[in-house]
Length: 120
Image (cartoon, rainbow, N blue to C red; front, side, top):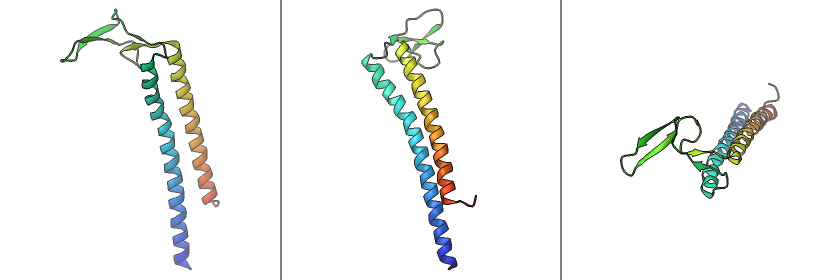
């Protein structure tokens, strides 16, 4: 009788663990996919981004192989491009999707724990 109870508790712990792990992997997959999609969409020109032109807020770097390039110090997200309006909309959409997915993961983890351990 005691061994069956221990095996049942062990099985439930694995089930809870894997449910939590799956939700966390899903959460960070959303974040990673948004960065991959951003690069792909930027290459198509959909965002309306333009290559940054050197100005007062720039410095020039030398990559040692090809040529010097202008780096935009005032933009924390993309040093090579000036973002178009669609890119900012996409960025904030991805931020809010990640926050929504995070809330969903937290609620899902709480539900799994409550379902598997109702005495808590």
